[in-house]
Amino acid sequence: MAALLPKGDLRPVSDAHPACLPTERGGWNVEPLECWWSVAKSFECVVRIAASVRLGEPTRAEWWTHLLPTIVFSEDRSERSDAEALYLSYLLNEWMTMADIHLEYLWGGDGARLQVSSDGLFGALVSDLMLAVAGSDGFAFCSACGLAYIPEQMPRRGQRRFCQECRDLKKDKRAADRDYREKQRRLRKEGGGDID
Image 1 (spheres, rainbow, N blue to C red):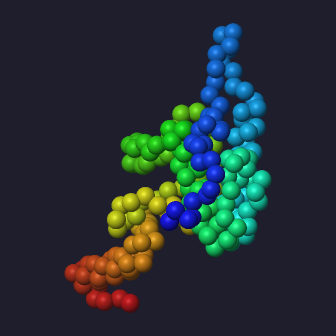
Image 2 (tube, one colour):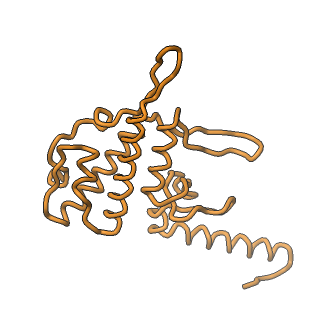
Image 3 (cartoon, rainbow, N blue to C red):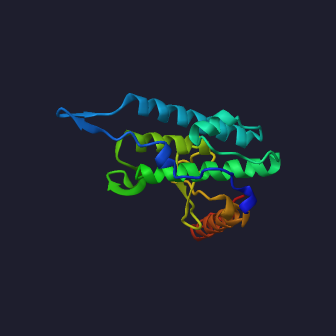
């Protein structure tokens, strides 16, 4: 596994890309515009890297050097693609930590729900970036195991949803079979017989 890690300076991303926190000057909260330009360029590089990795295409060195100036990857394409995906995950996790991104449980008129929350613009941007890199509109919770996952397509409200691992274990098919048998029992009990 060590061979998959990029070579070079692996200092925390927070050292290279601050979260553009406001500072007080003369009674005003001021955010340096240069910092936000750097964040925007970093996000552009992440999106380009993610798209290239997903398509199996080579990434450009300048995208990575903007994010970490001293990073060097192996020239072996098979090893490099895995390393890039791994490092991109590391990068997004670092930014999520910096932005204090967390889940909030809300209960209101529409029922219970979970939402991604953070403080400030940087957190909102990182949340959107993370979903863009994953190619999704949001999170879902598996009806079988209860774990959160990023679906390819958002399920409709009230519809069962299953993560890839539970689909591989055919838990979605077993749930559908169980529903069908229950519907058949209900119909027989009501005197309607079997319907197919």
